[in-house]
Length: 245
Image (cartoon, rainbow, N blue to C red; front, top):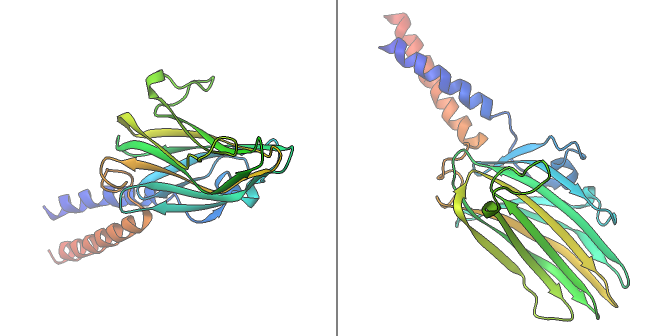
């Protein structure tokens, strides 16, 4: 009986060790998340895996090395990131940046997504600052289309100097809970006769369980460390008992 218990413990230890391979999402510059455009970085946050980060800015404002990424988790089960950088455009100019990444859960617990402008502004005729976000709850096709179309969602937040007030927050509830979400956001500033800027915005997902860990996502390294340590201690006690017997 004891030998059987020991055999059950060993696979759990191996599973915990494998999950430790991914780092915890930490505050870093965006070029760390994109792995300097290699798109090979992945990390975990509250039981979810974030990966395939890609960033491009044809106008060069700002470079990914000058964008800070800060993970966020709240009691409501919102999990995601704050992005901080000088997304700006002066009079008569414009800037455009595209940011995308993938979110993975172990089971279909992701029920929605939201985006918020936290620090922004647009002044002068023709000035605007906006984020248009496309969301796909299945893997996009080779052409980038979300199939079926029912799995595609869109969010739009903006400050338009000619048409106030600003729309600062937007969210969507998915028709069906998802285990994989692909996010692509287009961040655009048009200076018009004045200027436009987005200094900070937030992107989060919501879950059916009120949090990634309760929804059945991959356990975080800290939790696995505690679990793994307990199992190691238990296996050592079993070995001692086996030797005595």
